[in-house]
Image (cartoon, rainbow, N blue to C red; front, side, top):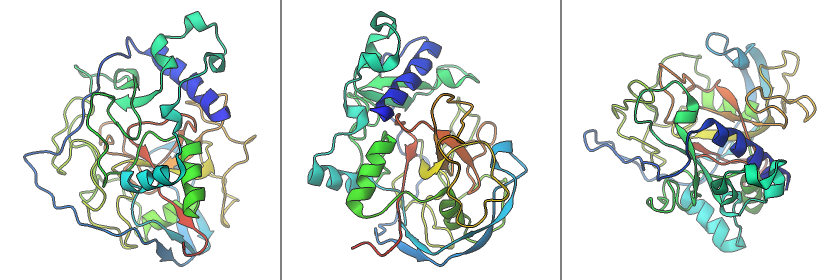
Length: 334
């Protein structure tokens, strides 16, 4: 129940900031002007030997520093984000129903029911919706859309989820359930960043081989990378570790709880702060998880988080249309 409670609190805060939450969101589509070939890639996890690397970055966002020499042990990691195809196999095998597909208990909001917008009691999730005019307020870009879920990423009247695209609209409990079924776990922040950086120096440049936002966010997306929204896995070149979409496309949730900045003394297989030590200034009152790598919504003028060191807190009880995950493993999965 805890995850759903945090969902409700977040939805209430989001909705009170919005003028309305009605209507269908726009379903991003592949650009007709730019052709990009998407490779058919496998699901076999990749083994990474342990090592030491410079974790963090000091020259963009304060919560990404300080840079520290960090050591991780060897592990296996998925070559790409968990896809709708893979998640559908899990659902078919287990009958799992995601948090976004369940109705909301009014008692979870902690306010009188008459103060709760009716749409927030319906199953649904947060969907990016391009504003009609330029705006610097995130409340103008996001809507709680009843009926939005991993099966229908843009709402009940939008297209079905595409099998080769990353699964989105999942809460922490959904990701954990999939990981247990698959015999894996969510990677730690250190493992994820080690895998993503792949021995390359930190950069602030917008990468060409990643799905991000080209143009002035959120008003103009020039789509020069070939996609207006989420791309199927395998459309961009892998990093030197053979891993796809470690930056851009969708944010990826990790196992660590979030607080701004890194502990300079915690450098040997760090696991992040305790629940009591976690703090997310954007979601005070409950612990957030660290998500990494940015998404297709990151642009130079707004969200320069298309980098391995990028990090933000993620509400564990609320899914979104630009947040996914991949798994790590302590032993080769059966």
